[in-house]
Picture (cartoon, protein in one colour):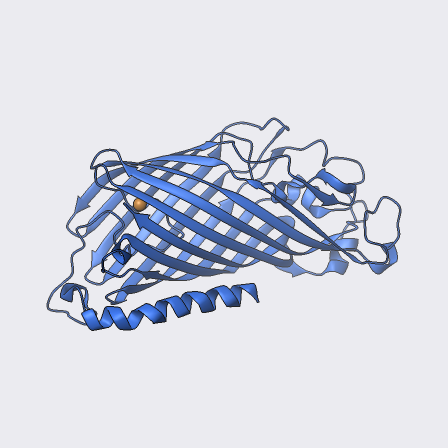
Amino acid sequence: MKQTGIIYLVLLFLTSFSGRAQENGTDPSLQAGSPKKPHVVTCVCGDGTQTPLGVMTDHIHPKGEWMVSYTYMNMAMKGNYMGDTRVSDDFIYKFKTDLAYMMAPETMTMQMHMGMVMYGLTDKITLMVMGGFETFSMTMNIPPDMVGMPHMNMDSGSTSMKSTSSGFTDTKIYGLYSFLNKGSNRLVASLGLNLPTGAIRAKGKTMLGDNAQMPYDMQPGTGSFGLAPDLTYIHQFGLLALGADLGADIKLNKNTIGYKLGNVYHITAWANYKFLPFLSGSVRGEGILTGNITGSDPELADPYFPTSDPTTVTENYGGKVVNLYAGLNFHVKQPVLKNFTLLVEYGMPVYQYLNGIQMASKFNLILGLQYKI
Ligand SMILES: [Cu+2]
């Protein structure tokens, strides 16, 4: 319901401005359907960007230019997968005689508010800093015959339990370098440094108590220093932009609790078409490979835990996901408004192979507002 509301608001915002921009027809070269004048994008400053919101390492800024942005992300998960197969709660309760889980995750949402600042250090090098605040919410089921069991911190008579946690995320500092910006080709290489500023001791409700250490997937931070190299290439064919991005998120050390989250490798490619002077739309495919957790959190290794809650077991982390996104970028070339770009992207998984037993990803909604100074 909440998502529907957000999408409705975005559409309302888009349609309320569309009439005005069309009347003025600011830049004829940007008009859709004018094949005689191939539109060459010379600006690398993110002005009316044709890059989908989910790709953040695609551009640099001219020397001395600032950009700030706010991004809201809502990821939802529902039900469970073992490998690439959906499994039922009953399966999770019974699937191994020596490791029969007493709980089955039902739904989970992750909401993130992220702030980002970019600054053009030189005409070729841009610095970028990002950080945010994350909120997690998860519901779990137990079999009806377990209701009232000792050691189970459930509301009396209930077969489900809801937990929440929240905290600041890690901070990422990027250096972006423009290797190529000639005619219709753009190549940006970047290197991010992950600083472990995020919470890794977020507390919440678990079967062990109301203020207990939350599992790995409910912690906003990684606790590890990390490196995030990235390479983004964009080619412009008139009103059509084609892009690809390849990158990784490498964790360098075990955190102070004693574990290290898996490295993440991602590849994505997109096509964006400017079908109106103020609006472009994109489709994007994305593959993400997440490695296993090394080490473990001793608090989660409590003897009751690994045989009860799948999210406390490190084998139940990592996997492969392929997502498909649709996005809109909205930018009006008018006084005041021209400094802003509004972006939205909505994605769903088309394939997932998840290690062990894990919650299946359902959708991902990203909303962003960028402001250039
Ligand atoms: Cu920027």
